[in-house]
Length: 537
Image (cartoon, rainbow, N blue to C red; front, side):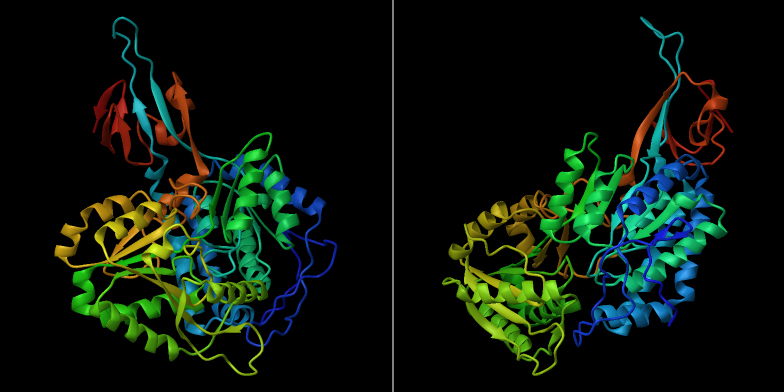
């Protein structure tokens, strides 16, 4: 295991900080892990942001190929220390080695995806409307536009993904790819993992000859360090994955600034599953097995965990329920990530047991004397009438889900209309079910960012088409995604150049199209060059 300094990374400098040390905890036994991490102080927070602001004019203007090389180098450096990362992350999260190895591979894969996007270059959405001096009644000017980066971006590491949504995760990768310096607020649950990855990024900045302020990593309490970062006048955007309370607080800070800035928060989602009659009749037990695997995956700590399941009454539903009951009762104990998550889960399960309209279908046996943050999975049940108008759709982070029985098609549609915004909704059905419930799909399109058919929402593919976002409160801005290549658009804004001479334009907008990117020229997509309104080959 590499030595950990427990110090913030501020450009090429090491933080000194002040205040009480922060320690990670091993979720398996509750023991404190060494070393302690020194919180960044106000001067260090200011320095990190100012270095990022100073780096922005240079970093934002380097070529997409150079940014691609930077991202690929980060991925290679992470891979070179994967055994150290997996060992430390295992101690800090209690996640199994195979999961952490897969998450490291995913992290490096999304870094390389954004490297490809940056190098290819068409993501800037270049548009050219050529001049027409002979247009009547007034001449048409030459107008060109493209997306440009925003400036320093603050990224908040997530508790449940120590790699893929943390220091070198999707928010960082997409911000870097778009030309933005990044300051990461490390998550207190896995600071050692964060430092290892942060050192890899810092070394990559040096080796690529980039300005010092392109990257910083700060340790500390979110209420102090995170809030101070979001209030800093030189910060231009933020990316967050976490609880609704923390996300909403930071979202409000971003909006209340003298200069409001975009803040992209993924906050909470219960991810409804609708099992339609034909599917339940044909493969109910298989769906039950898949559902159990999904809501207990990662100890139920995925933001896409299916937390409420709607199914019709009848003998098919009874068989489904019985199968799921057996699976939950036979589940092994799980370890949650942090003391706070553990306490919240225990309180939520206790509260749900007191609900008069809710019954316990099954609960796995508790671990005896295991210590740490051990919990058992639980399955609850209610009916559609009780569910409507209740708060039973609230997210419970952990290995539990709620069955909701309904008897009519009308109740299904009413529930779909009344649920709040979620990241996903899943439908299990036959082709006949889809025809009979076509309006359910239309309703769910307005409530979620991703619709899953005959699958399960856990397991988010990193690809060009993926959408990992949804209407509030699942995210702060349902027009965006935090996974997939579209994520780069969060940290960019359109800039228009009117009447500029060709030599003064960005490379992406020059007549000769030196980068060979796709551009819209007079309304037509092309990779060809243009000159004085004429295409040239």
